[in-house]
Amino acid sequence: MSRNPAYRIFFSRSALCAILVATPALAALDLRDYDDDLMRDLEKTIKYFEPDITAQNAQAAKEDAEVLLDGFRYTEDYFAKRGKDDAVAISRDGARLVADVVAKVEIGEFEAAAASAREATQVCKSCHEIYKPRLAR
Image (tube, rainbow, N blue to C red):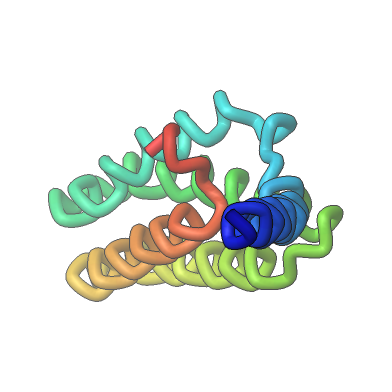
């Protein structure tokens, strides 16, 4: 009989500790004010980015790049205001890769541009692994 109250106290304290540890992590990932329409546009655009480059459609690739650059700028600013340095760095990496794509497309280096576009896609995914809500994937 004496083990039962001790078990309850242990369980209650463990549950409380788990809640206290998880609460700041969950609060840190509150993205309700993130521009969901922008994210949908970015996800749609990134799907066409590399295929447009591979097809050597420079105009479409540049249009895609502009949408992506706007998105990376928004994301960098959004996460900078929240002190999320890792997400800021990811956004900057993505913007750098997209700018590299544009430079390569402009000189006709479509294969190299496509490789940079694939890297940009991976940069997006790396941020999603950390910040995109699980139910939204």
